[in-house]
Length: 594
Image 1 (tube, rainbow, N blue to C red):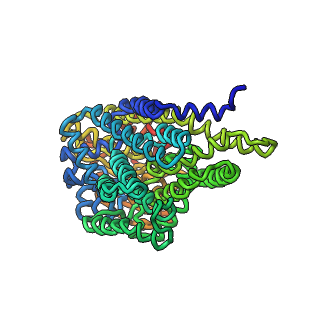
Image 2: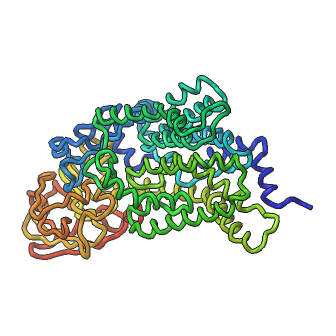
Image 3: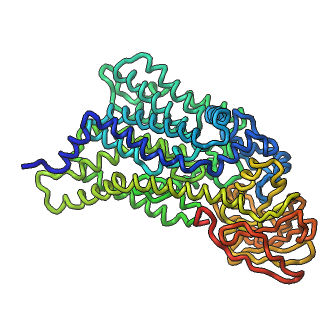
């Protein structure tokens, strides 16, 4: 009589070559990301290194997008920053190792993205190998092997491996995981180098990016809830004392602030140290959204375009369902797996909390999945196993485990490949937006986008054009990014009003990235950008509902282009006569939902 399927699965997972097969799979599944090429913020980093943007940060600090200097920001409004940008906007992410790597890649590969992607793929395969060593160390063979597989094919790892500007996530995670492995060897085997290599790995990870705080989360969770090695004290005081090395994080936070790191006056990023209450409010929404992505692949990235309510509900339901499933599996879970999950799961949750200040998206789940993958592996393997008396009660357990297996074993690799294809498509469309924009023949002086909600239309094309030629487009201004149709009414030879229909401006995730909702814009607020005067004529709840714009020259002036997003291109508008209006219908941009 043949053994039941889970036992056959366990033997397959314990095959001597399974580890190598998963590493090969990680390579195969990540290889297509080379088709993405450069994407979004990649062009900003390239523009910094080329000096195309006034006030570009130095090569070792490329993620210093806004340093909070109001005078510098005002001077840089000509570089594509939206007119509503908060004068005190700050977004300085201290990632010197990631900045140095990008600079080195630029020196070696120039504007050929293939080399950058090969580096990312190599880093990802190395991270999968390090995570696999951790899983196989703390979990039984079959469970650790399945956790490795789930981690390797996780669809929310696409951006860290496929988006060059996200290499900082890999540079943060890899040394942090290696340091954690070294420290576990020290704690459990007395391997003395691990006492020093552990903190060193975490320190190197923090130089890569603040995401390495997730590695510190596992360190702390292990000290407080992990197994106690033979001959070591087991009390809470002893565990707390063993966690003292993590206090070195205080030095990191102090250094981070000393060099001006942090975020302020933005709706996308929340600095927990500077705005703890606002961070708590954001975390209450973002945590269930990210858990829904991690547990049932409900894409967190979609919340940048869609209401977050359904995503929060799905996340909470997924957590409740997984908790019930784990309880049903608990009698079959051996002590070694329970002991591992007692610190891996809290570590994953704490790692999630450390990431909630970032712009919401699945890329934030890279280090949290180091603890989530083992939990899913335990529940899938133990949930699918037949008990001695199956009965009706076994069916919900097996159905739940089967659903998780379908999502994370069968569907996740397909989602990874689909997301790769989607990102490559968006990247090519972004290039097309820049290439086909109807800017007119040189000399071109100013371009104004009347209405387009997709950042691939309003933010990044200028960087692409600037890299192609420093004089390609001296000034670029997006007047509205509201996800709505607009009405433009010409009021004079050089002036017009612009209003979104059915909603206000500054409600979308990419609009509030430049100005937090807590900073309302008053009626009469006026900005000069690209030689144009932009005045807020009407507001609703602190959000502009109508603009008065004077371009300072006749709209027919050949030196300027008044554009709208239509039929997949930035097209010159058919200018109405004075006193007449034209409606600009909304249409989705390259991202599809914006």
